[in-house]
Image (cartoon, rainbow, N blue to C red; front, side, top):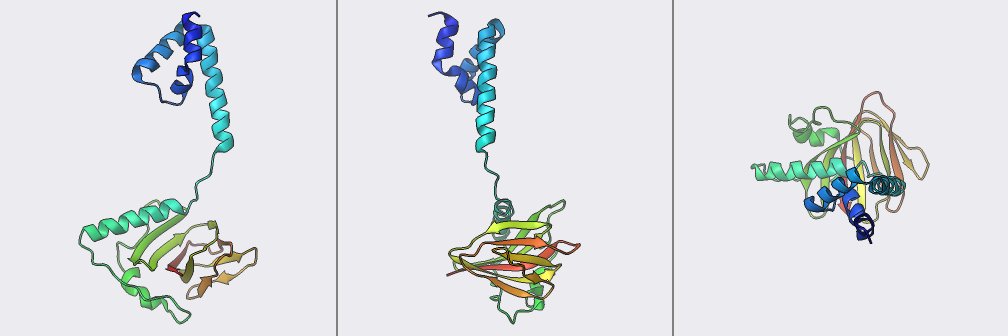
Length: 203
């Protein structure tokens, strides 16, 4: 078995394409690819196959995950910097926007500069309930809650909450609860982003 055949059977080409080869192994692959057309051909073919596999099996990340992860990090940093935990009132059909003025009026409770799609700021968290100010620019993708009731109160803008395809339109001051085990999608129907107090309560 010659040096080229030994290399191609070693699995190093695959490791190189995956970025898992050591620097010494990667240098060997690059050198052999410069010297041998057969190695270049196998390398290009392997890259093509891996890319096709990756594209075919790619999963589009849920656009809600990142803003709520960033909101959690922001909330933890605020507490570490001395902010005292706060306990917003529970949202009910009698809730008013004014009930949340202490948080809505804070300069640090605004979306970050250049935000897009979805932004969130947590204003209170316990083991049973998380309350956040949320801004949605265009839409929030379908979700189904199995262990948390989601209540919301519209602060600005308007939206259509589609429950399993049924339209439900909400405007400033409106309150609504998302039922458990029901798929829902939020579509913004106003010219401005929809701003809401959202509360998720464990059941």
